Image (tube, rainbow, N blue to C red):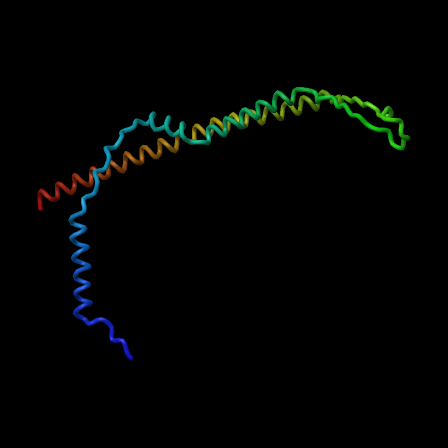
Length: 168
């Protein structure tokens, strides 16, 4: 048996119904009104960008960590207390342990260099924090003025269209 398909009249009727139904749907559909635009000033846009951007908070956390490393770098290392059993000793009933207390004494230059390195890391973290603020401000202002320029282009194009319709 061979399938001959739909008769041409049924296929044409289905296509006409499909296209006419689609056209009537498109004409009957009303889009919801767009909410009114909120006008922001440049300073409001920058403050919102700084408020919702995670970069300044992470830069501030790195700065706090670097400041903590500076305070730790200026101090001498903690003493060490150890409880040890002498090697090769006989069983003394728990009285053969040694208590060892030690304190590492560093040379003054080592402390000074470690402190200088920690201060340099803190200064770099401060610069990163300032850089994050400047980057957010620059990118927000750039986007703001680009949006203003685009709005002006749309207004100029609509004015040109209205003028050409008046003369046409």
